[in-house]
Amino acid sequence: MKILLTGGAGYIGSHAAVELLDQGYEIVIMDNLSNSNIECLERIKEITGKSFAFYKVDLLEYDLMNQIFKEHSIDAVIHFAGLKSVGESVKAPLDYYLNNISGTVNLCSLMKKHGVNKMVFSSTAAVYGNPDRVPIDESFPVSPASPYGRSKLMIEEILRDVYHSDPSWRIAILRYFNPIGAHHSGRIGEDPNGIPDNLVPYITQVAVGKREKLQVFGNDYDTPDGTGVRDYIHVVDLVKGHLKALEYIEKKKGIEVINLGTGTGYSVLEIIGNFREVTGRPVDYQITARRPGDPGVTYANPKKAEIILGWKAEKNLKDMCQDSWNWQSRNPDGYHSALLSEA
Figure (cartoon, rainbow, N blue to C red):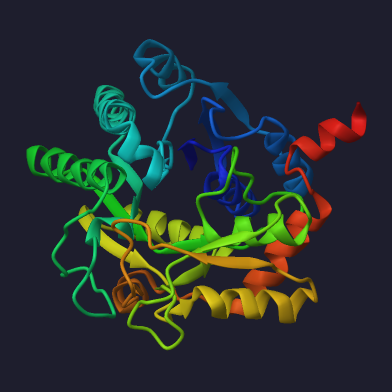
């Protein structure tokens, strides 16, 4: 099978590329490199010993995407590409709606044109907003608290309409909880532009000396230590869920929404403590005000994934912290470290 990965040079996409190549799939990567680095592609080749086609193309560039479908016999699409910062989406909602929604409409139109009807879509647990109880299963009400989350939910609705218009489509919508960690080689990992939006890259950048202090947003939540609780999942476990979803839609028509999480919640202070214990590195932090819209506690009920995909997260918090630090310590400036060492 030949799989098109949109956003395949990004954090999750790059790990999916490695897993797919290791499992014998052919891949084509499409990425505009707005939040990724071309060095990552070389490292995917290094890890797997395999090559693949790459196109620097944006979701809004319909004609250039059309050329990809003309040049390759694509069997299925894993759709990672999209803007993904909650805070940025509040400041620039139109950018998020244009890129994420219009881009996906372009992609689906081209899939239909070229007879490709299998998609695994990268959605988010942010569609649940601030749930009134946990664990969160797929039947929970959806009420996203940011334009980012709303853009993902709108795409889910578009995909449902696509399926209902043509029931030959096979679509898996995967709602991620909080991916962290990195490939065990330390050669690929999360490399955010600017100040990290996510907790663990911020922790690792403080530990490596790139940033002075971690901001912990709120310690007055109704949790054991007052800090927010989240479901953290190792990125390698997460992408293995995508391969299981690919296998599922190969066998079955329809559209399914599936949570990918561990089913366990950890607080911010627990993550900091585990990271210190695993790495022996200090992590200085200060408590600041809550961020608007941040829920107190979110973690998944991952049973549906186990039942219909035969998938379950395997790596523990120690693995996640160790692999995150392995990546950051080997690459203090992310993928730019390689460029700086060559300069």
